[in-house]
Amino acid sequence: MLRIGDFSKLTGVPAKTIRYYEEEGLLIPAQVDTMTGYRQYDQRNIEELLKILYLKSLGFKLAEIRDFDDTAVIKKSKELKQKMREIRKSLNELSNLYKDEKGELIMKNFINDEKLVGKWQLLGTSVEKKDALLGKVKPDRYFALKNLVFLPNGEKYWVITFWTKGYIFFKDKPLKYEFVDDKLIIEFKYDNEVEFYAVYKNIDHKAYKQDEVMFKDDISMPFKDDKNLVGVWSVCGFVQDIKDFKGDMKKDYGYYKEVAIMENGNLLFTLSDGGILKDKIRWTKGYIIFEIPQVAQKYIIKELNGEKYLFMEHKSGDYSFGGMKPMYYVFKKSGN
Image 1: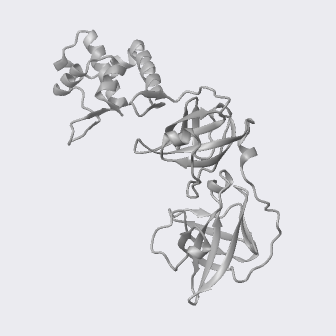
Image 2: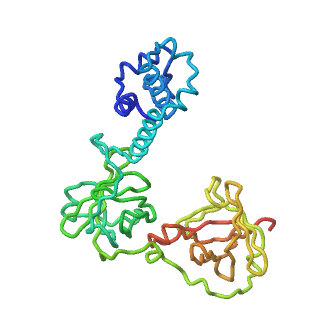
Image 3: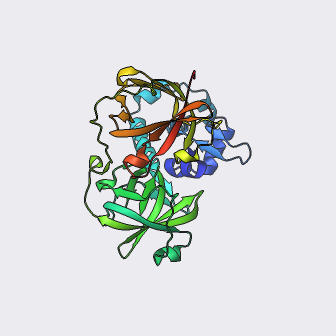
């Protein structure tokens, strides 16, 4: 969607003219904010505006254009089709534009920065940039991004969806970075306000491939029975550590809803969205094993207040890519 200013620049038609066409009932914005009056335009509006301009060039009046059957004209117009291809190309380029804190547009095009490529390890964070520049940072045990890898050519890695010289896109949000000596400083924002600065030291500048930097567990262990595990378990908690669990927590825990553990190493997860997960997973005593990604999630069973609870490690991307300690899903056994 485009604001009227961007729509005007893209099409070359003044905003005043666009509003006039709206008043004449020829060009209705895709969306209008009832509070602010801001107009939003989409691909359909571009096509409508091109039709108006084309028919005007043929000598039609606005009143005639309003009721005009344009199917035959548009099909025959090679010039119009070429113009549409150019517009679509411009729209694709606009989809790669982001705005920095000054409102200036950032193009999501790759520009190499060999100094960024490789592994980096967190030294700490600071809320003040001057302290970050001087290396005066504090450890932050709650900050997840303790280990980062920047792959060549701006390739996606974990939460880094893209990077280009000067900017790192974390989950598609551009964050500025800079170097001070051999340290990497990344500016982390929340609602366009700088929240803190993270300072990293370089481990190496190797051009890794994604498979080379994923943590992978040994999953070669054979099946060993565990009668206590067999049964149906319903999710009831998600905790940083087993000792943090204080009983059933009444809320939605996102990914898992239930797991049915069957004999001979078979199991089936029911997901919160109604989906089923059963392929390339198995269990053996002490572990629930996922072949993709290659992780062996430890589990333990505890009895609390007469109820049985299953504590299962959750080895997400934070573990596989970030090397972080896994949290725990907690399941309560049904039909005790």
